[in-house]
Amino acid sequence: MSSDLATQAISAPRTLEFPADFLFGSATAAYQVEGAAAEGGRAPSVWDTFAHTPGKVHAGDTGDVACDHFHRFREDVALMKRLNLKVYRFSVSWSRVMPDGVTVNPEGLQFYSDLVDELLAAGILPWLTQYHWDLPQALEDAGGWANRRTAELFADYAVVLHEALGDRVRHWTTLNEPWCAAFLGYANGHHAPGRTSPEDALAAAHHLLLGHGLAVAQLRRRDPELELGLTLNFTDYRPADPASPGDVDAARRLDGSFNRFFAGAIFDGAYPEDVLEDQAGLWREGLVQPGDLKIISTPIDVLGVNFYTGELLTGVEPERAAQAAAAARAQGAPNPNVGSEHVTSVPRGLPATSMGWEVFPQGLHDLLLRLHREYTGGAGVALYVTENGAAYPDAPDPAGFVQDDERLSYIREHLHAVHRAKEAGADVRGYFVWSLLDNFEWAFGYDRRFGIVRVDYDTLARTPKASAHWYAQVAATGVVD
Ligand code: FCB
Image 1 (cartoon, rainbow, N blue to C red):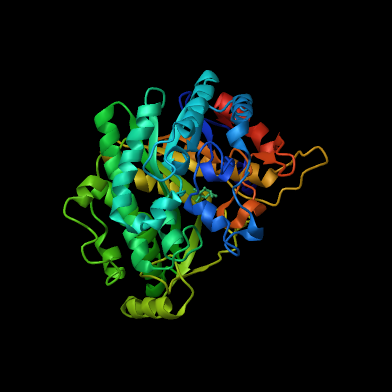
Image 2: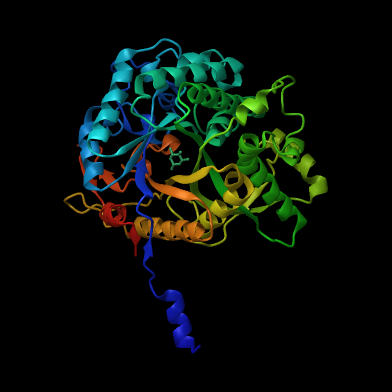
């Protein structure tokens, strides 16, 4: 092949086609979009408390108003319909439907019932996430996720939701990203409730998973036909220098505590041995009770995959790692990588989003195939990319329109990666862009914009960006240029 032809073959745009039943949608989460924090009987969650604590969230931003989705959901559903979206992944605010975590608030449930009706009337599939990090503050006051009782209450909460919505909602995700809830919430305090205890973080991780298993069992019992699962977040970790034993160990460690910890518990019914070794001494006596892993690994139908980035890692030789981790834990800043606090990441020089996350679509391709091969394929569990997207510094024109070429190409490249993974055999059935709207990006407040639709936070006006127009075509035709 002449060099000209070779270049052409690589750079020639390829048009891809997804099957007609592939679900294109978007995702949001309650605290990030709803607002109406004190309306309709809603009580504070840990995120209300955290955001109202000075110094925790960028610029003192809170979710008090957010995108005002609570009042504008009909407008937002109409917008989704205009964008040809087939499915909407939203989360329920536990403290809206059960303000103290225990007592039902019918007015709160009504909001979600109305939202579901509105979606169905628009021909959009409602995909419910039970928990996207906003624990009722009353439950945090009783010990939060470090308290085993929270897991039991989580299953009761699932039943309450199913009673109200189970006749119309077929897709149920128990947890969103338990890694973040446990390790950012309880180990490094970057997220609510802002605790900095490695032991609490491991307790929280275990109880979150236990709550998931208990909820799945309840939901399954009530309706065997539901599509049940959870959403995990995955990062592609590789050694900075594949020839360095320290770097190889670093990648093994974070792949273990971030990725395999959760997938192993869910699909193998066991926490990976090597991860338990890395975390030795940090698990509280009696935390894992007989039968817990069996509950946690209750069969599911769907694994939600959230993917944003990959990281190259560096560490120290395996023989010195435990000591280095302990020293970093004792002396360093609070760290979410419990048991591997000495590991650091090394930029690989790829373009990065405004989160500082390197753009690495190959990682999504490899991940989907790996999950299919090592966990989901054999179990007959379907994969859905439940979040993927990017924050960039948008520059709106006077009419509020954003020509967000970088976001558009981020989404396009990741859809190419999904398509290639599907072709290679991964059973991926849908893709949800994060996010429908610019929204409250946790500790970064309103500073980071992930939406394909711009939200003007002064007027709350919504303006689809270039990426939304492009994505609407993809959703309508299944064709990605
Ligand atoms: C994920 C969260 C989601 C959003 C994106 C950017 O970790 O699930 O709420 O913040 O990151």
